[in-house]
Structure formats: C-alpha cells, structure tokens
Image (tube, rainbow, N blue to C red; front, side):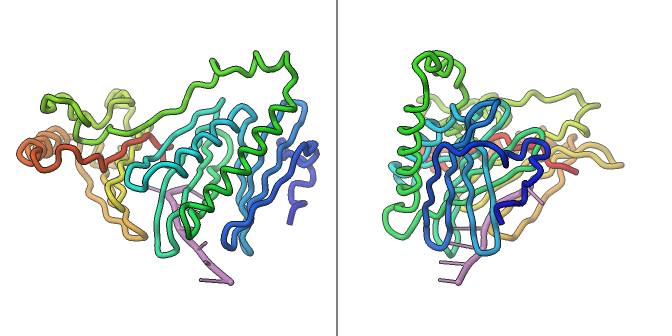
Length: 286
DNA sequence: ACGGCTA
C-alpha cells in the first residue's frame, strides 16, 4: 500500500521527486531504497516490507556515506567484536544493534527523532557470510556513488565533513576499564559517564535511560519515581523474558560499592573481557 | 515461509 500518505500532511513526502530507486530482497524481506528530493533537500528513504509489515526510516542525504561505512563495519568485523553504534545526523539518532534469535543474526537499525515515533528496520545477516548485510551495503554503495553525481561542485563544500560529527563508538564503557594497564580504581567504575545526574527534584521527570548488553542479555537502567520516592529500575531482558529489580536511590551507593567489591575480587578473571556495551537510549514514554 | 525489535 504505497499510497497511504496521499495528502502529504505534515511532510509525508508523497510528492517528493524520486531520483533513484532500488530494491533488494533478503530472505523473504524486501527492502526499498528511494533517493528523493524535495524543496528542503535530499534524503534516502529505506523501507522494509514483509507480507504483513512495512517499516521505513529516513536517512538525511549527508548520512548515506555514514550508513555505508557502518554496514561495511558490520560486514567486515568478526562476530565477536562488533558493537552497537550510534549515528547522530541533524536532529535524528540512528541506533545500530546486532541481535540474534532462532531465525539467525540480524542488524536492527532504529531511527529516533524528537517528533516522530521511533521506526526500525531489521536486516537479516543472511545465511552465508553476512551476505544479506553485504548486499545491503552494496546497494548503499551504489546509491552513494550515484548520489555524488547529483552533487554539484559548489555543493560539496557545504556538505563536507566538519558538520558530520556524531559517529560514536560505545565500546568499552562497561564496568571494566578496557585495556588500561593499571587496575581501575573505584572512581573509574562509572557507568554513567555521558549523562549528568539531574538534581534530585528533577529525576522523576527526566527519565534517564541506559542499556548495557552482556552476551545475549540486555540490562536497562531507568530512573523513575513513585509515591515512595525515587528509584533506579534495572531490568534484565533476554528474548521475551524480562525481570526487574527496583532499587531506591538510597541504596544506589551501597549497591555500587558492592558491585565494585565484586569487580575487585574477580578482576583477574574478567580482565580483558569486553562483553558490556553502554549506550544512551531514548527516555521511555510513560 | 519466516520474523526479529522495550516504538
């Protein structure tokens, strides 16, 4: 059903001119790549279509080469040392996450923007040597090539890379300081390096969320509050199972010190492991 | 013939 954005209400893009269209089939999914243009500029629309589902992300024009780089990264890296990535482009953030289930491995690409709901596409790795991702990467490469032809010479300067910061590698923000030669003192065991703690009276409103991935599990850290006060909820999510502990903020420091204690006494065994991976996620909506 | 994803 392509025509569901008929009125172009709120910038649906229905009237935008198509510069380039490509399709890719991976397993039973169909991916549509549409390079489009409107008065505000160019963008790449990537849609994932299943028999029952369609999901779309919109990549700003200057993000196409970043997408290409990231897919190259996931295609070329060994399975055991790929990590989640975040890509900030303009007002959007794209999250790249590896997942695996009985169907196989997949790459989840999720677009978060302030206004729109989060949208996600999931690209199967494919059966042999990530060929699903590789095919996806090849399409991106073709589009990136073609897109460069659309750039006029005088536009290249304004599109150049100094504005395009935002590729962040989240590796190594786990409990263990990566390869530092000295043992991590307790003050370095800081899970929350990138988010400033808000004043206590704002915590309830300013839901701060983090997630770490350890093997197949994910642990979500969410600040919240109820009539009993403020708390940190730590949720373990593995597959469809989820369980949580609710830690009153008064217990946070003892909890932290206790974890630090176990980090200390086990560090001989866990030094060098880099399983944990921290990133910021959108505040949950509630 | 899938169907994943704290939307």
